[in-house]
Length: 260
View 1 (cartoon, rainbow, N blue to C red):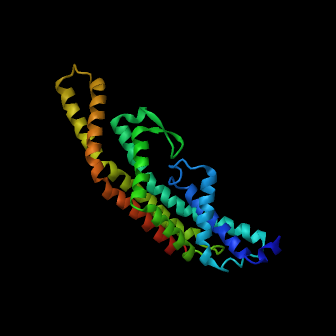
View 2: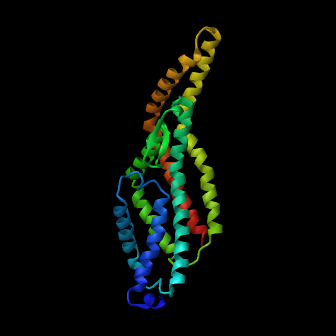
View 3: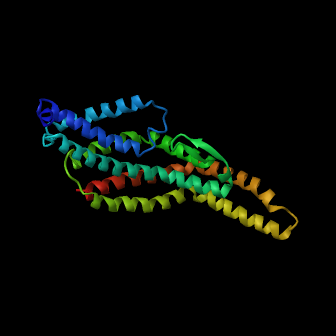
């Protein structure tokens, strides 16, 4: 089996396989392709095609992969790199999910479940809506172009088949996870504040009208106020969304610098 990797062009084929492993692990960890109903064959061809283009400048950089055992070991490293980069993208999209979960609990939509094609599970209404909105904003901001540039940059910083430090890359990932909660709450903060003021108003009303059933009255009022506040705040979500995408790029930059 080792003689196969010494044939002409075998280094390029090995490079395509390693790049495809990194790219596939990255895309499996992100909801970018999951949000689109693409057949598995199309996704496989897309990964192989992009990997073949990215592997063209590699030349003979994968010539050190001399046998199948070394190739398998290199594939495991590429899988770890792709999963680490994909985790950064996943946490960026999780900021929208966190905001949706918070709003569903406050508005009262937590009892309503719909099918989310991104996670393939039953999720509340606003969580599903904000998750899909995050994917739409990602493409509108040319995030898919930045994603491909990040993959190409990772090939320069971490050449295929070469060792890299997972321990040093863990710090930036944890830092990005910590910032996720701040940005997720900032995405829903104005709506939560409006609902809090409405709760105070309902408390004053219940104090002065004890005969009123606040449970029956409060649920529709919270739904109306929450949706109204969300519709007014939707036009200003772009700035927070840009910060979330900027945190993704900053996290990748820290991983590239710290994982050397």
